[in-house]
Image (cartoon, rainbow, N blue to C red; front, side, top):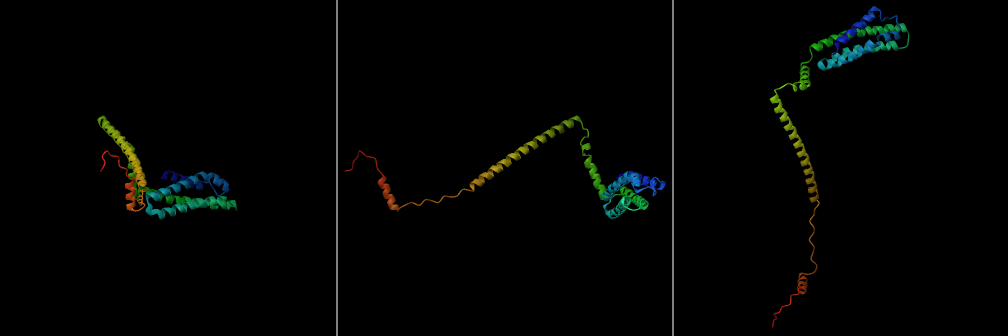
Length: 224
């Protein structure tokens, strides 16, 4: 949370309204020209601080939402009065009243932000610490070691990478084999048993036909 910048802007804008740098005697357009940059930045910071507080202390969400909404609403009204139609002197007065109110509400929001920053939720602190450890993993991995140890680990790293590559290739080959086996199973599942052909005619006729077709070879021995 950029609380220092937020606090600085609150002080600067408050000083401008009390010292006469921005006054009710000025036209609305002149007031806006003098205050636009600071008010816009202050609004953006208030929204950022609100988000940070909701993360650090979610159990105080209701109070955070209420204070931030009140301040942002006053800043919105400040701009609305400057751009609305009507008597300029009255609009300037109404606008500056809202701006002063926004500074008071901003101070309350700042106090709450400081309190939450110094005393965030324990669970959130634990999560943030884990994040810090995770973010520092590259630093931890760069800790220097003896050359002999480094060579051994470098060799082990290469072996592991080679093994990973071999496993990847084996997995690809097994996947291809599984696909081929599935294709074979699919083709086999299409097979059906053909029905047996029925023999035409009677068995005796078939036997006689077989005997007639038999033509024994001539023999030199004849039967008497």
